[in-house]
Amino acid sequence: MFRSVEKNPILTLICIALAFLIYGYATSLPKITDFMIFCIFVIAFDLLYGHMGQLSFGHMLYFGSGAYGCGMFAYHIYPDPFLSILAGVLLGATVAALLGTLVVKTSHAAFALSNLALNEVGAYLVLSPWHKWTGGEDGLSLFFKKYGFINFGESTFRFYFCLVSLLLVVYLMLLLVRSPYGSLLKAIKENEVRVRFLGYNTFLYKYITFIISGAIAAFAGALMSINLSYTNTSLIAPTRNVEVIFAALMGGAGSVIGAVVGGTAFMTISNYLAVYVVRWEMFLGFALLIFVFWFREGIWGYLSKSGGALEKERSNP
Amino acid sequence: MLLTVENLDVCYGHAQVLHDVSLRLNEGELVCVVGRNGAGKTTLLKTIGGFMSPARGTVEFRGERIDGMPLEQVARMGIKYVYQDKRVFSELTVRENLELAAYASGQSLDEAVAKVIAIHPKMGTLLNSKAKGLSGGERQILLIGRALVGDPQLLLVDEPTEGLAAIIIGEIIDILLKMKKRITMVVVEQNLSTVARLADRVYVMKEGVFSREIEDKKTIENPSSYEDQL
Image (cartoon, chains in turn blue, red):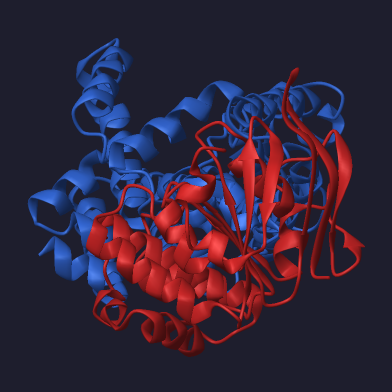
């Protein structure tokens, strides 16, 4: 079953759509909307980490840029939801393009920590010097214009809009990672020097990938801003970077489906376990240890393996 | 002259590995560099390939200095490297490995595949296999095949037969012989019987210096005459 899902992008999309529809109607549409947005963020993060081998500790900066780009456009300029999302994505991509010229030159610990440092700077700027535009600690309360049935005030509409957005991101990402460009990213992850000796300017490809990842993270941030109808500093908080790293590891890094599985699993645990257990983070810690020591391939990797399809997944992520 | 290496000094930190090494290479030649482990053969190859920068001296390719040039620029000039460790991009399939080389050189994937199949027909059946599943010999053939994509001007081959079974060594030598004359090559090798079959000219390297240059074909074909100088 897992083998069929992996091989066929359309089947992948159908399975994801069905899973979220069932999960949404069985539980709560607004909550599952959050889950789907988080999955988009995990996909963005995993493009850098799982596919290109660069662990960022500061991807919340791009998520936050998207959220603030969207929020500030709607609040200060014009409350059109689509233009606001576009503003968020453009801001995230621009921030990634500017900062990428610095951070993409680094790798490993320097890459991870420079991203974290920049995230700290971004969070500080939003909180204090730019509070006139960002609303500082209070954030910005948002409303968006309605166009007929397009009403982002309706939770059902937001759910379907985010579902379509997730499916679109998954589809585009599957196309990307299965293309020669995806092979190039995998090769860079394995041995960048040798890719350069094939004649590739690896900085350029890493830089472009960084911008794509930043733009997708910003898209997720913009959707979150619309879904919550506000933008505040929690959407750019550096402390939340661990969530996306955890989700990517949990689902199985280097796999688009794994990112969706990991994002959903993480959000399920953090939303539902918190109802029953006060210090639920402790269980996440134990879960992370289990994944690090026994299930390095993550949930999706393990399922694929048990279905005899691990190799297929790795060759066609 | 295709390649000219002049008075090369190369260091790892404070340790100098190559001392005043000079080498010249004519178009279509196959030159072997022989020497014991640690003599500096691979360091020389890496310096020519742009992986290392010399402390002193120059490397010129078709009259243009390439020492200190970015790796990708050296590769785009048509210099290809076949690595000693036989590490291919293991997470990619054979086809994807070739595809990467093809895109970089502007050649079509079909042409790239045809080139590899021409030197080793069995590779045609392995195109969709993960490279990490290949045997040592198959990896070496894939590396050579990948280096051939895009019509290289100079092939730097580092210990092509090291660690391979005798039957595979024969195949690798046959492949290199097929490529000889069409592509200029510098081959680093410890196996002198292989050198005897391949080389037009031999440089003997000892402790980071060339101790001898052998041009006479009869001497090259009689390795015992220079074995004691390694």
